[in-house]
Image (cartoon, rainbow, N blue to C red; front, side):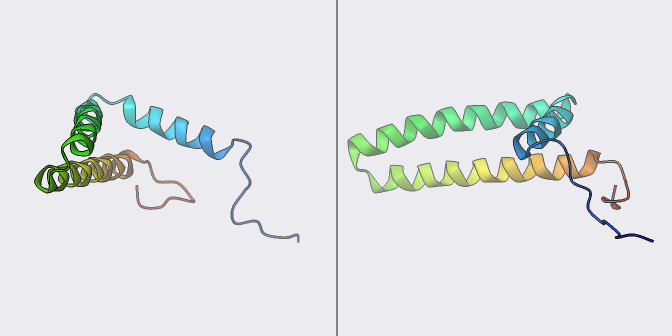
Amino acid sequence: MGTIYLFRKSQRSLLGKLTQEFRTVAADQRSWKILLFGAINIVCTAFLLMWCSSTNSIALTAYTYLTIFDLFSLITCLISYWVMIKKPSSSYSFG
């Protein structure tokens, strides 16, 4: 009998794991809508942030923060979609 290793060490780095999981999610066409809306949201948020700095408008700043909140909502949708497509395994039993 030897030591029981519950979590094996992986050979890939954290960035490699994230890239592989992103490719898994991006392979499905349904996730492309979420990614497209996320990219549009990032462009609009960057434009609004530049506009806010030049006008000093409180209302425009509040609207910009709402778009940032929407971006986090899209990220949450992408994570929930990733959880939905995961297959059950010994380390991930939910499936």
